[in-house]
Amino acid sequence: MLVLSPILNSLLDLPILIVVWAFALAFGGGPLLLRFLNYKPVARCAVVQAVSHVVAIGCWLTFGTAAINAFERGLIALSTSILVVACLFAVVAGGSFLIARWCPDEQQGNRTGH
Image 1: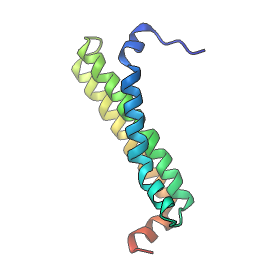
Image 2: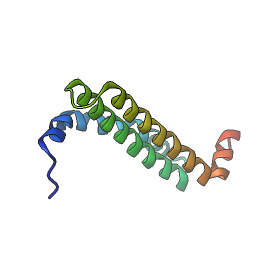
Image 3: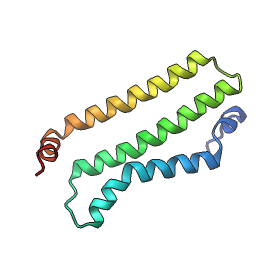
Image 4: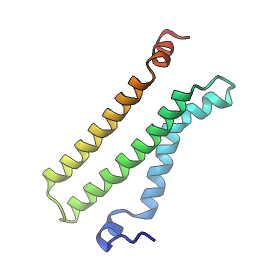
C-alpha cells in the first residue's frame, strides 16, 4: 500500500482530483467517444492520442494544482512553482509532438479531409 506523507495528502485533495480527472477524461476522450458513437472509423493512433491527452491533461492539472497549493502554503517559492508548471507544460507539449511523429500518415490524412 502506498502511503503519502501528510504534506502530499494535504496538497492533493480527493474531491479536486476527481474533478480534475473527470475534466481530463471529458476533454481528452470526449471527441474520440463522439466519433465512435457516430459510427465513424477510429484509427489506432487516434486512440493513442486520446489516451495520452487524458493522461497528460490529468497529470498537468494534478501536479500543477499541487505546485500552486505548495506555494500558497509556503512550502516552495513562487519561482519554483512557476518552474514546475512550465516543466509540466513542456512535457505535455513534447509528448504530443512525439505522438504526432509516431503517426505521420494518419495526421496528413486528417489535414486533407480523408
